[in-house]
Length: 174
Image: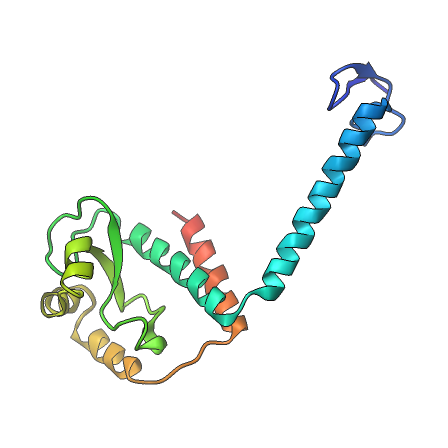
């Protein structure tokens, strides 16, 4: 086998196996053991953290990914409420409030990019939002959205995990 450079001390050594990345100097072996322990702890910690997540934790993560996707999808488009170019931070504005209308919380027809002024200071500027929303998705789709918005819904952890994975994939496409 060819000589290799040790991953830790950078000296040349003769490997015993093709997978060997470090020499057998005590410091290098100690570094290798510590690195392996750290990798194992990182995996274990991630698993423990996932086991401790509540439904609300999954909702929060799903909402963050969903909002990021909406902002990527609507990048360069004007504010849905005032139709002005968005300067600065972009908000993912829900036509039907996410906290009160869980059935359409992750509905892409319900959420569009908005400026901070309309979304936060004017509570969505809903009268103007509706006008531009009809132009964007059509009256028939808005009627379907209204029907869905008034239904009650509770998400399960598995449904939220599916939403998270869906929007991770959609974000990767941008």
